[in-house]
Length: 112
Image (cartoon, rainbow, N blue to C red; front, top):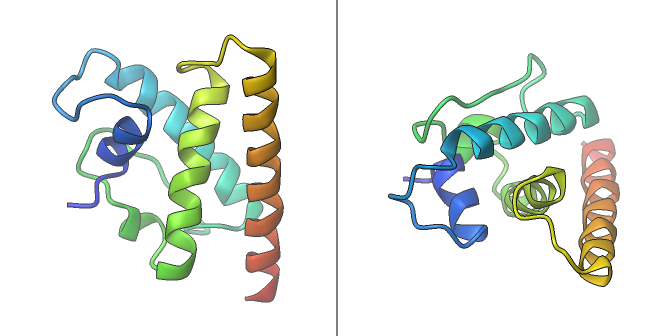
């Protein structure tokens, strides 16, 4: 299964079966999915998850963009409040990465 929640947890370094932080992670994921929808990425009507049953293919069917979207969601979830880096250098690097990903996703959307 290509679960949004499970894959983001993996990218955050959490085991799939550890559910203590799931409500927090889901909240941050939904915030990032809203940002992506505002950028024109994903369903026009928006998208949200409530558990591990939602998949990436439900959010975006394009196999070229899906990997970039996965990485973007994981980086933004970290920056929004889950496992925010304590080092200002690391935090700035993640912010720069997120900004570049946003730019690239916007370029891809504009091409389509």
